Amino acid sequence: MKNIITTLVKVCVSGVIMYVLFRNLDLDALWETFASVNPLSVAFVAFVFLSVQAIASYRWSVILRKDVRVPYSRLLSIYFIGLFFNNFLPTMVGGDLIKGYYLYKHSRKGDVALASIFMDRYAGFTALMCITALALIPGYPLIAGTGLPGFFVLLIGGFVFMSMVIWIGPLHSWAMRILNKVHFYGINKKIDTFYKVLMSYKSHYGILYRIFACSVVIQGGVIIGYYVLGSGLGMEVPVGYYFLFIPLTTAISMLPISLSGLGIREGAFIFLFTMIGASKEQAIALSLLWFATGVFVSIIGGVEYVRMGGRKAVEEGMARK
Image (cartoon, rainbow, N blue to C red; front, top):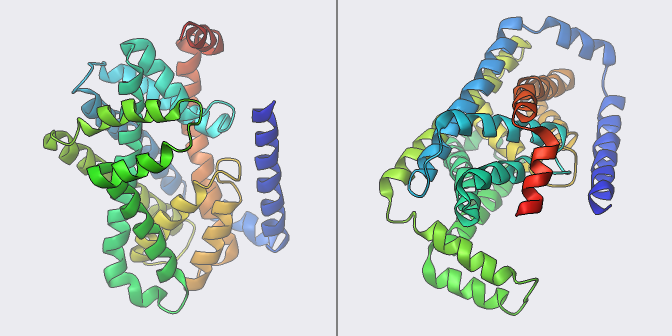
């Protein structure tokens, strides 16, 4: 019941935001923008999505290799299933939960599954923050006086602080002492078990370097994909802006207050890209076309989900856990 209510609230939030955004758009101009898109740019975005899943699956295999061996083809299948759930059932189950289930089903190591999924997400976000920080060096004059530098400082600074709490022993111990006062459903013991597995990666520099390199390629490819799609929509925006704006919109869309970031992401695109000459219609078309292409590609995950037993297999597996 709680999941249903949460989903309905997020649908309402996305619906209200999208209504407000569309009310202030020239719908004829928006349709013309969609109709004018270069089909090759959309095909390139689809290729980017497929490539990202392939590279991310390899990254996950590198993370797991220390503790468990899983065939790459299996991880690729699981990754697509996770993408499918993120797009079609983002609050009912969630891609990470379903990925964790399938990995646990294969390895019977819950702590390893959880730590590997965290490392996979963390590596991706680390690369995103590094790209943003580097892009800020030449890009600061472009956003000076807009209030965005302060937001970037908070975003990157918050990530650095959380990373220090995770990886630096004394800071982690301090955080755990605070958490120990909570005693919430035994979460402290679960965190401690997870943390021990996570810390085992600290001495495996080869793994850390390789997953970071994969993450840089993934994030860089996504940004270039947005640039190609924007160019296909007729947006004359230098690529440097994409390296600033895409990480920011990605972080904003992760806020768990809307359905798959829908509405929040589009509002951010309009706010950012209209500052540097794009029209509202181009900005929202860029966001929606990217999202729609991702949803289309993720249907592969739906096919894999059915092939691997579908809902019945997951529910039976969860019951055995």
